[in-house]
Image (cartoon, rainbow over all chains, first blue to last red; front, side):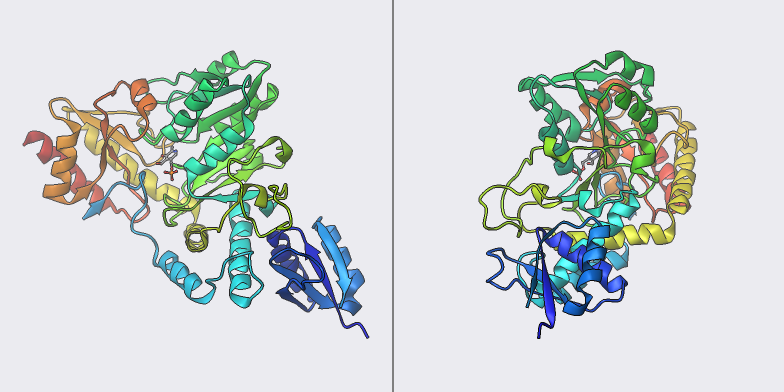
Length: 73
Length: 382
Ligand SMILES: Cc1ncc(COP(=O)(O)O)c(C=O)c1O
């Protein structure tokens, strides 16, 4: 069963902003090193509980945060 | 020791600033935005939180439009050299620091047209003189918020409305005002705000920034430096995302943490309290110096029209001699000469000799001012 999802952003500032927004909204998140299979990029991705996926998307969208991709893990 | 050189750099720094700087190196000393481990993430969080708080200090809604630079000079260069192309027209004032003047003179050689609006001898700027030089190719008005030589505050909101009416943008050099005069970018109509961390924002040297207003089209600004950003690493081209487009290379994490704490300190103390204190000290300086007939004090001599920067010269003495005596015999530290602003000294009639500049800061007391006036009296009569 899928437990987590990860959001990939284009910039590190977006990751930090997303983490802050989701934390303030009470969601459980974690920043983890970008898994190699998703991107050749350096830095981190934001992991969240897959059950929160729709709400997470909504919050990021409302904040006009540009998302690269979202994946199940 | 009495430190009256706060216009060059503020000293001492609040202890909170020193602590924030050592703490961040010890507890969050990874490379912000590069690696995926806890120290890198902790560093990135500090950088992002600082970005948010500093943006909000200048009332910038989008923290990603706050670009960290190494100082005001760097920020001014990012804006001027990023925006202006040969054939563009740019307007500035005759009291600018070389941080503005030198990049403009260099751009002039590359085909940018430059108009320098003359200020009065006391540094004041008549906005009608700005209107007169505007034309259809004017891309930018670049001016200081206040003179670093005589303290004169320029009418930013009025200049903004002149610039915008002509379809131009406004760049403001806030090196002498940020931290002592409230700056609300959208309310004042500022499109680019260059600031430096080490003066009245109470931070360390080596950190500053450029805040970019919502109305500025980022795609029209070329980065002056390109390199690693920790984003889009698969590409060999500079990314267009903010703030990365303008922030290549490892950021000054220690400086950012120190500046963040400095701005928090300013907010806690209250910018109005700080301004009132500095006005009181400045008034005492103006009054004390005006009683000495051998001294000529420059500037508007009105604390509502200036920041806490006072320039004077002595009829029969070299300014360098006055400065040296104040330092060696009285432990009073100030700056003499041209203060990196030859244009301002030409405007007020003190070129090439320069002036003695006294710049009290948040930690200066009324006692310091009385002692200084007595010392100056003794030096000029010696
Ligand atoms: C009006 C003004 N602009 C720009 C600067 C440059 O600041 P920095 O040396 O921090 O770049 C200064 C201070 O030296 C200044 O007083």
